[in-house]
Image 1 (cartoon, helix red, strand yellow):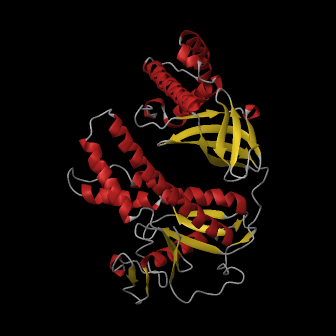
Image 2: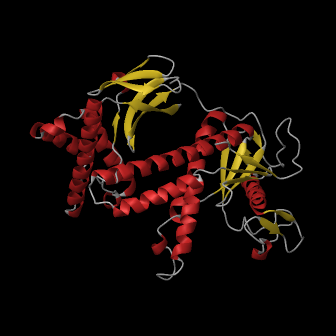
Image 3: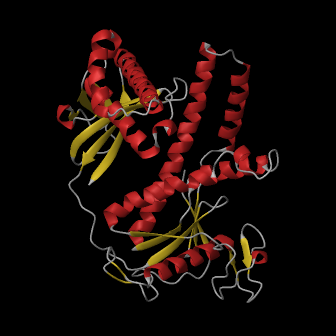
Length: 412
């Protein structure tokens, strides 16, 4: 099984300059290759990786700065461009802007990469052109290195190793129980076992500091040194917030995929749900502020990050991920099945107008999602779980039925 290991790098001044040069070379190769492909498409012809790789060899002989970058990194950039054009179309692939694109390049040949441990906290890796690179050995590799990727986040550099740990996905999960998961904007994750999982990713003080930095950024002159320092400080705050969000998603996904053999979630396209507010409203100029706030709330809770983390953990545990249509899951009563928008009294309260059933709105939606997943899998056996789900799944071994609503707060 291929897994990723990411570490923080301690570059020297020469290695920082060389990394910037390699990143700029890869960005130039990407933009030049994309423009070449678009010109060929306008003329009714095609350009593939083989032709561009041959022209790259000639370009390195003419431009000295291009020859200073490792050949494998430039060729890998052309491979990534070829795959992006095949998957999304030549005219839908975006340019790599100098201001918005994060410097990143990959060493695809793992045989030329050596990793050594220096102490309990530090290690080093030998990369082409860069030489020995020191990094924080925060976790063991546990496998053979296939490739390495250097990336920058603000003023910090990272190295990511693609490792083959020689493990396989289990044929079946240790448990046959199932759980439904509802993702919300007030509470990040609500489960059908009467648990709510949420965490504050940014403190009020950090939000206030970020707003002050935004105001300072608007008053500073473009391309100035002070403006660059302000942008670095803003990225540092956002990186801290992203790390907390990823940690919460990974922790919650590990708890669910380890305890339950089947996890049912809604089939949501987060990219379409968080499109630009100005292009998603019926009439221009109406509802833009409300849609923008909804987009920020969805992205802040990390719906897509949680789904990716859940699928990643399912590879190790054998958990089966089932997606169900999200229609009417928040308006349907989990007891009698009646659908009425008036049953949801508020964001957190659900009271059925037909039978009077009262429940937390997100918990009720999670139970409807679980019922939908059971109806989907009732037509046949679940091979990853090794058994039929035609009957109602039993609770986990050793666990008693919940008697009250409780909230799981992930420590900061």
